[in-house]
Length: 342
Ligand SMILES: [Zn+2]
Ligand SMILES: [Zn+2]
Image 1 (spheres, rainbow, N blue to C red):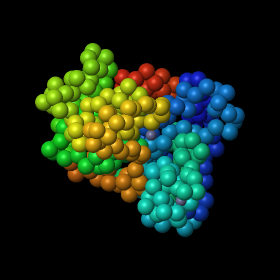
Image 2: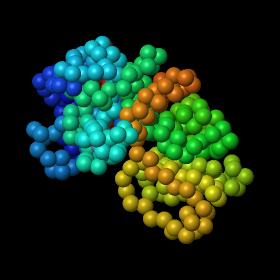
Image 3: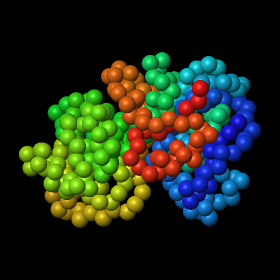
């Protein structure tokens, strides 16, 4: 079987690997879809000399979705033939964070699939059965892959913000996470202002339910948001870029008593706390992915509300086309990109 290894400096290798066999409590998932997520671009872009010994690097990808092909001894809750998404972390299983399903926050440290363990960019994935979440019949594998990180992250960030139909929300960045947030916030009834610098991404945002789009390369986004909110700013704002300037704009375009959520990772950002945050009485959230149960929740929401998640998926590749797929995704301007298997 084959797996994709990020070598660094925007190079990857499609490596021949032994097919895994499940140990006690483990399953082997025959991959059917594996999403490309913004955080895969970090190991992809990192300098080669910082990636370590190439022979020891693990298979990338952390949005796995497929069918259980084999189950090891003592596996309960899932069976061979089940369609599943994988929650791509493991922890000790017994600490406070593991017990609420946030294994990524395990107090003893967690393992991330696609980094410390082989991830979804391979034909067969070895996973603890406890990380598998049933994929609803009504969802395709590629939709399940999206839910497994980027799309699920957007949904749970909006839940932190308690978005309702009475709110206007400004969403900075319309990549796969930001566009998912646009789609869900619209499905929750909110009025969405979508901000990006790539016209194709703004077009996609409109299709997914944005009421207003702002090209931040053309004009000042804070001013533009105030113009469409009676000069007050948005009830809530969300940053899915991780870019300092966009984070500052997310804070500055929130109304008095408004709420801000940071989802985009990386970078250091400086705020003048008194005028920008304290005197505006802002509530600021950080939101990092979601729990094991949260994965089932986002998939159910997509089904129950008929959320147009398939429209988010703009490009499909086979694993053999990994070089091309990552080159395209790295260039920005796409919606969700996924690897698929027949
Ligand atoms: Zn733990
Ligand atoms: Zn991710």
